[in-house]
Length: 210
Ligand SMILES: CC(C)(COP(=O)(O)OP(=O)(O)OC[C@H]1O[C@@H](n2cnc3c(N)ncnc32)[C@H](O)[C@@H]1OP(=O)(O)O)[C@@H](O)C(=O)NCCC(=O)NCCS
Image 1: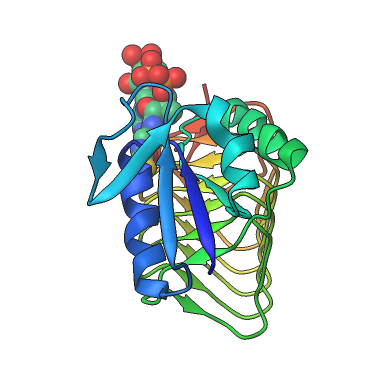
Image 2: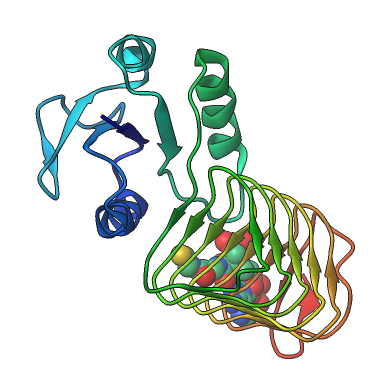
């Protein structure tokens, strides 16, 4: 019996739940959320309580947990949740929607979500606890750091190096070989043509730091 807890019951949880169900890997799935009353259901799956119930669930045989809180701009909440789950001893699966196209040479870290129709091409490396959202494309040999969220339809062309805790907005593009430093935020629709040093926000076409 493989039991999974989804931690966070918002919109991102629904995307992850969809992918999880399509994977057919877990026999029992429950959700925790501090703001949704226990007993409520999300897409037919039970909210069983808030974060305080996590140690009890571990005792009951839920060995896998997955953070389903989304992140825009800041990854702090996701990082704190992962630390809490790690301290209780949970394992983190990779959840990859079956419609995603993942090269056999791509490497994906634990706790990472790969959404519908995302593409990870040859020798891509995606870190731990990342979100590679619906339709995002990570081209050959690119690297994505831990906790980074590559949002809907964003494109990293070949050989890009994206740091930790970054956010690439919906439909943004990094041209080939671009380096994006840790904590960078790229606005929706931006075209990044020059290195971003990190801890900055860049918007526009071509992107400028604002
Ligand atoms: C870049 C972004 C993070 C900035 O958010 P913010 O810090 O709240 O900034 P503001 O909305 O206050 O905007 C600051 C300025 O940048 C401009 N701006 C914001 N986002 C922009 C974008 N994507 N492209 C061009 N300009 C943008 C604003 O018009 C504003 O300009 P002004 O100072 O001349 O008025 C945000 O606008 C964005 O693009 N988010 C991505 C959303 C997304 O991809 N969601 C998918 C979720 S899965």
